Amino acid sequence: MEIWTIYKMEMIKTLKRKNSLILLIPSILIVIMAFGISTGGLTFTGAVASGDGRFACLDFVTAMWSFFNTLGIWGILLILVTAFQFSGEISSGQIKMTLLRIGKRCPIISAKFLALVTTALGAFALFTFAAGGSYYLFVAESSIGNGNFSSSMIDLPNAAAMIGFIFLHLALFMAVTLLAGLFLSPFIAFIISLVSMFAVSYLINTNAFELTKYSALSVSNHLISGKAEYLLPAFLSSLLVIILLLILTSLLFKRVDIK
Image 1: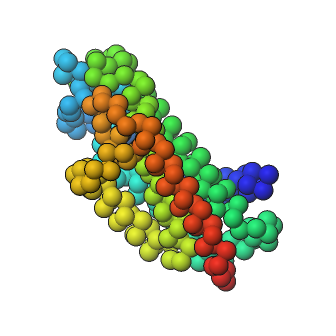
Image 2: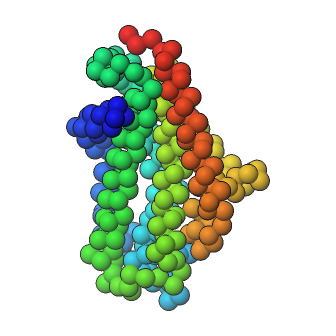
Image 3: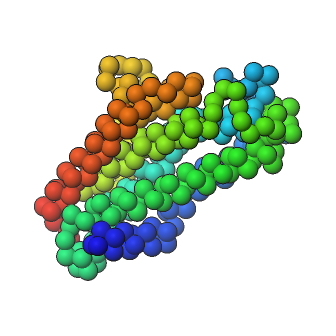
């Protein structure tokens, strides 16, 4: 019950904070990009196009997810929000109010992480709907759209799984940001977590180690090409790492002096 109480408090705070609005940026950008593509202002090609070289809705949504994830846009925004909403509270002493109301520190980490994850899920869903809606609004009738929803290159379950594993990969670095935020200022925690994310992503994308094939990012990359491999091991390993990070953060949080 403590976690549920804190979770509701954190959700209210997260939704009221203006820095949470930056998670709307990808949804705004996708609409602008779709309009630019339809008018010829942007050139859009990709290996996920259907056999006739034109894009179905699933092709477009998958390509946009891959594009935004490859650029690290989602990672940057989620890590930034996590850093300022946790490390910022510790640095400013605002978290004292939560501690005085709850009395225990361990549930705060879990509830805050769940609130941030819920917010991220909402932003992911909005982006997906914005991509699909923009396709039918701008791209479907253009020279590169075919107006179909289904694709010959990727099916709906694979597309959904790809987005899910991207989310799992980013959730891991949100947990890393919580850990770093215990001892560092919001900006430094953001930089360290961001560098860690890009370094790990590089190692995964280059297959530097055999174990990287069991990572969530590696699985999401394979799903784009229709290869559903190592789904369960990747899901369990990522979930285990996230849980271990949250446990470590909770244990260390007990020793942090809140000013």
